[in-house]
Image (cartoon, rainbow, N blue to C red; front, top):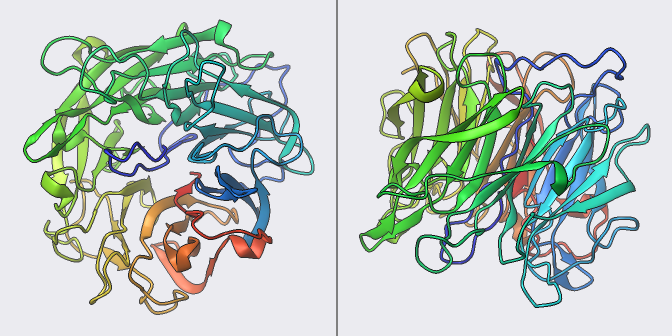
Length: 501
């Protein structure tokens, strides 16, 4: 996801590869073995991509990404910084382009090296001064990510202010062995709603031996009639098997219009199921302001035959002062009978550490993974607005374990920068928990946690915690920022505001 216009709450980058319970379609016999997502050098260890959407490039806040290498020792604390000024990368830096505000990875060309799609949903000025978003595709190689053969995607159809690249996600929806790429454009098609709150679209580019192209793409839309029409459809995306057919489906969030001063329009969550012909049409599962979110994850919390959809709702009520919630959609049926039952989790729910306080932003970031390897997906929640003592917006991360009956009511954990073993100190404005990533970087069978703190020291920072088999160990955890990668102008970059997962 990207940072929305000022009237919208800040958004979370969410792009998923193959989540818990998803079975990938087999590759054709002639294809090379596909690399894991984010494994750009094909060594079996997935790298970590860190977004800095306001990184200054030649004095312009255009954005960038840092790629941190992974090995059996875990993540490196320095890496290569990529911007639109990097040699070979198409385009040029533009103010507030937000290059790196969303990304997705798969081995698009099936050569054994993962590739990376990087969104820049902000300004890309064309001849008539209309601003549109772009997605840049970079390819992996034996030496890692490279700008060779890189190219740019834009939205098909009439050029307009579209925020193309609001969100990106990838999966093989049609089962042909090639990963497809879904790109949200939340400001496209202003058919209904007030100014700056258009319906929005999602473009699905079909994978294949050739590179992605608009000639091989499908445009998905949400509900555009009745009272429950979608606004900003495509503001968030996630992929996973939600109808139980062992094929990846596309889950689409529509941000809606925040309910400031009692007025607004509900957000929604829709599911676009996949078939041999591709993905879609889309079916709206939940509507109302409580689903107007940019944080979505998919996983099997109860360990049964169906994945749940988890939605973070940090604060979209009057004056944005609510403490935040996480909503879980439990699914039943399929196709036209697909239904959801919604349950709410807050810091006042039994067994959840902490308590509800205004501006906590509980649910700003969410991720799911089986931390203790018991067959149930566990929930990790970021609360970047959480006050630690008197330090406002210091931030916290909460772990709530899954179980046969749903989330557990005991044994859950919370981490912040005052937790023993985590480097640094909780300070006002750090926003620890702004972004989350659960990935087994060292391939030891345990998920590691990477936490973004976009306000740390004015530049942003990332903290890594090694998986312990039951949760995480703070021993050996590391905190680092973009200065370790040698970048000369880090101030205000928002490093760690978006994390690959």
